[in-house]
Amino acid sequence: MTEIVSAEMGDNELAFESALRPKSLAEFVGQPKVRQQLSLLIEAASLQNRTADHILLAGPPGLGKTTLAMIVAEECGRPLRLTSGPTIQHAGDLAAVLSSLVPGEVLFIDEIHRMARAAEEMLYLAMEDFRVDVMVGKGAGATSIPLELSPFTLVGATTRSGMLPNPLRDRFGFTAHLEFYENAELEEVLARAALKLGLAVDREALSEVASRSRGTPRIANRLLRRVRDFSLVAGHETVSLGDAQQALALYEVDSLGLDRLDRSILEMLTTRFDGKPVGLSTLAVAVGEEQDTIEAVVEPFLVRMGLILRTPRGRQATAAAYRHLGLV
Image (cartoon, rainbow, N blue to C red; front, side):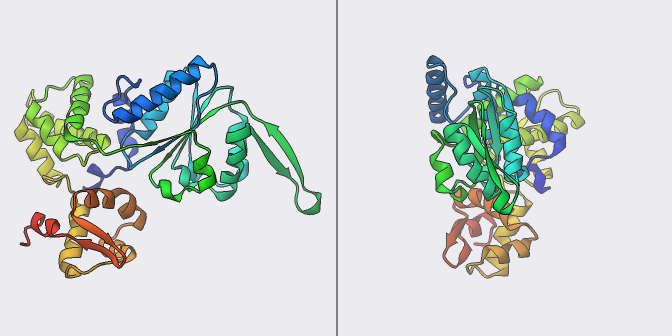
């Protein structure tokens, strides 16, 4: 059941998520400071008839980084090229992408911190001077061929901004830090989604789903779909609070929005390891998950909710975790 509240997205959810994406900054719910900053940056570039500065979007998964990149391209009236850091493993891969850009195009690189180091170093020059040097040949006979690029705007997205090398981070003209959403903002996101999908949903049901969505719009929309399915199968025309509660209980999402994996981590920390600090690698093996998944997807929410602590000796459960699990 973990995938229900995981911020990782499956292929069968793409069409659903795409249909709910806002198309402009005015439609985008939440992140008011970031929206104002992006609006100013885009408008200034338009008035000066130039490409917008390079933008880095940093924050946990599911908060709208890809959506904001699409909106930047839309607001600038420019085409958008999408790629991701893991697919750029060689400098030649990046050179091929950059050389095919048209003037003013917006290049979005998701998970930019996972690019190969050689590609990162090529990107430095491309971002500053809109050119790259391509090495041809090997050894003493190798030559460098300068390749001029069309002016472009790079939008990078990362869940781990600390892993970006300083030279790359410094070349972004603007860095946006996305924050987790408040419940009221998530209710607005869900109300907008329900309207687009033609769903009749009680306000109490929207509030219940929002409170269990871990402050993340992607998870909120995913849970809304599960609740909608439950109501549809039950033959109800309107999604009620009872439908929402029963559906979320069925998919093992508790009152705080914790799923099976979250509770498994808390139970390991509180019972299996007797409340002592546990290293990340040991914890990952104990629950059968990847370290990256725990560190980037699960842990930020548990720390934010005050359920676990990061200590020099490892992860440790708090008193709030014991209370939530009913152990005290």
